[in-house]
Image (tube, rainbow, N blue to C red; front, side, top):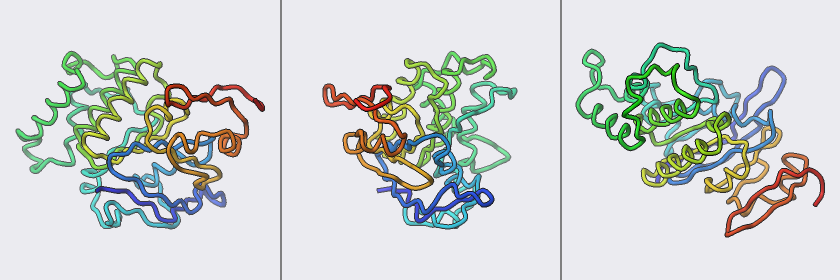
Length: 260
């Protein structure tokens, strides 16, 4: 079983501690949602895992191997990332963006993609129904269409770990549900480690196997949605007490402030 293990991860910006000894192990086949109030360190944690920000302390292990021992190419084969904001102001077609997912796997940089790479691209294009978009400029896509392309690029990368930073924040409910359904299916069928920073507690409850609440740069609590989406924990993390409903086995949070 693949896993991504964080061991006492810390990160500081000047004198300000953003992450303070984060300990957690993510396992393959599970989609884990990272939630918490603005500024608690959710996105920072993903950037530290990716190496975009240099941690001040701690270790990150991918299947018991210290990621610092991996080359950037080897790391890119194993870990994929969808940022909160990805630029559409580049002169790329959809097909060119999708093929970027195979770059870490290219065996000969002079020849580019080989037959096997092209096969992987075509399989994902068909699965996500992206055929009609292939020759379109990415600037012409809607937000939902562009996120679908980025998800396709991630699947084409065929990594062991997928990190996503608020990928549904600018999407309507239809696109959000479609995006998360595709992601969840990938995590389950390919036994991927899935980690998503998400603000919508109800979407997290519906799609995430585990939820990790961060407060003040620390893990406040983690567990299944039923275990952690409770008034006392939401009060601690967000400083308000919502109304919680349990319908047909699912947990829903009503955005009502104050005691209920």
